[in-house]
Image (cartoon, rainbow, N blue to C red; front, side, top):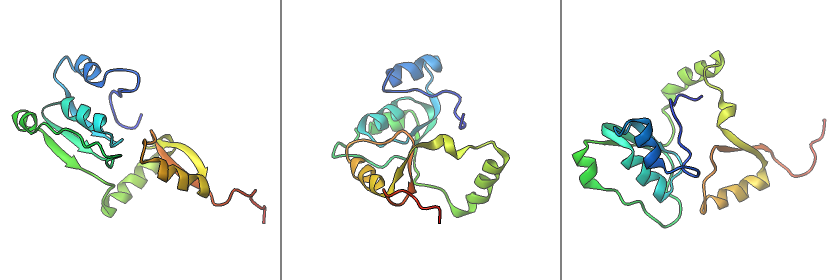
Length: 147
């Protein structure tokens, strides 16, 4: 729905097995680790096809660093790219996609929270990562006034 041809939920399936099945053993052209866990980073590297690209978006969580198999990366000629957002010059194109309806940013939001809940969600990221964005939409726990 947001550009991928297939999505693998590693909570319910073995990511490496499923990607091998989907790609007939070739691996994915592009893999993205948006979670930042040791396992998700390692799976993304192992699931990338020869000459493919692995994009690391998720920031590392906790104190467990991924094992990065440099021999495999060199042998498979993988490109590993770090990404933490986009360049300001990309915004007009992104906003155009939103305006045209081709990109629905609401699909990227896991839940909406208050400011207080947002602070807790930020602290909880030491132990896990939300599937989508957590968006602060209310700035007090008190009911909002109409005025």
